[in-house]
Length: 188
Ligand code: FES
Image (cartoon, rainbow, N blue to C red; front, side):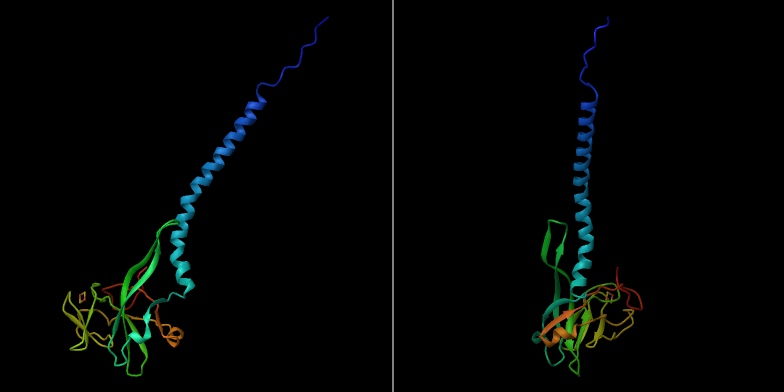
């Protein structure tokens, strides 16, 4: 008569299940950790878009009462808060400058200070009432028209938010344009 063989506990199914769960768990953790830089990088690239869409692309540069009524341009530095990544934001970073003036009809006009020739910053000269580019000795009239042919075009005007002017604030759609070209082309 054959003795019944006692059932032996499985030696393979339990460890293999544990091993599967362990591998699944570590894969999930690795995926989660790997996702972090990707998400923060994506936020970094999307942030300027989100920020500019929140204001329609306009940035407040100053108060209207700082712009003289006699047509003299006022220079404003353009500052923004720049987000580097998900954890780092630099406050009040200067990204450029503008001249803002009132014309004869009291319309508020804004210019990028960057010379359209090779990108030096122009300075307003109160005596001759012109903007001087020191790099190649070029000048522009107070309304931004070039006075010599070295720059390929007039100073670049920028859009001003008329609604904000009503509450005494100057908001400008700040853009940089390609230099050395006859027509205004926004830098990308
Ligand atoms: S950079 Fe202004 S004239 Fe050349």
